[in-house]
Length: 624
Image (tube, rainbow, N blue to C red):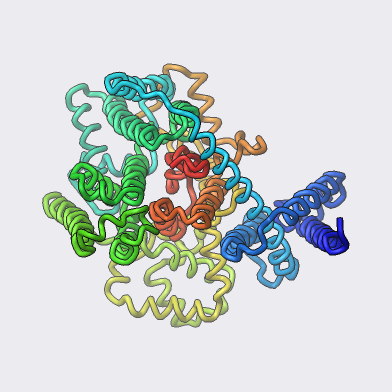
């Protein structure tokens, strides 16, 4: 070893020591520790963490490509956002607000960002080496070809296998999880009194099946069970289609088998497959849309040449929009993104794969096709919605869903900083939010306050209340920030305990330490379990902190944990310039952006995290 090489090694080892030591000292800032606890600082565990950090950072610094500035920028942004989320999330979970004057927070942010950036870059290099090894092996391995008849037989068996695995759970929780606004949707059909508060397509589907079966059999439970069976068939068919798609893209057989078992047995998948909430069908349609977008990005020529693929794209996007309103907002932005890429990037062979052959046919042809497809989607959505509203005489008088964040911001400021409201401000506030409603403020859930929002008063003079919101916000901006963060942090902080309904009494129980899943059968149904022990197992998963107590495994249930896993894959694909994966990922990101502006954080709002898990894993393993 010459002197120059020795100096470089010494320098890198010194940097590794400094970064690892600083990172270990800052770790308590991202751990949800009780005040004055010595669980980390006065523990031999902290020494092990320090030694592990030194080894990992030293190993990384000696093997990373320092010239790859683009990779460092992407990894740095990802690490900064992750560190910010962890630092903010700890305080939100512990005390209900972020103390922006806490100097520990601002010292820890750059230190931990630097540490995580180095580790992320090293892990990306590791994944890249695995990909290169797989490419070399693929040159010497020929996969056996399965006869087409056998393939169709296997696909039917796959779908039936999932249904058979879900059936015992349906019997255990019979007639299924009739929860999350299910009673309200059923009542609309039963009373013929409709509103646009819930998507009318889902209202008619759910309420129509329950009422129709009840009319024939005089059993609401059987009607609810029939709806669950219909939904099970739809979801299992779409999961089977995803597995077919993975097979066509030559994803490893082992990955596909694990994916099948995951769909058949993982509790979150099973619970929501047997749940009446509109989120299940919305997420199923969203998953199919993501698959369609991957098809578009991977082989645009085949996509635009196939009527089946274009129809599949239209139907999946339309279904997604019809089953949740936030799907409309997300896809409206996605439509602009798609037009931009088709127009600017489609023909260079960079964004959507090697499609140089399309350039000869003329760029405008494909832009017109995409514009036509998007026009059909939005025109169909507005036509179907308008016809249903007119035919059902549905009332459309609610604004509180889209105003959830402003309502929470005003309510929080009124509770903790009432002195900033002048007399005129108080009078204006009470016009749209009565004082008894403001006293019900729950930092994690907007429902107690927003349900009392005076829509007609607001509609009569919107500018008056917009000025009020802006005026108070300028006086207390950090209160507004904390109000929004408290309402959404479960979607991006991995260690969140989901207890937003704590203390709320429903039909058959009162929420306590966990609100992970509704586990309810709302009236007119009732629980009639055929397999009580299995029913109790799902009750425990839904309403008790059980899976959260198991290290690592608990992250499979954490919306925030899975979100950062997906963000890692997204950033890695961006780094690898796998743009045909990045664009479909944007659709998921856009949906996520709409839910962090919603009423609370619950797994059902980001169900795509679990439904799309096999797809994300296949992407990370460079299988797609």
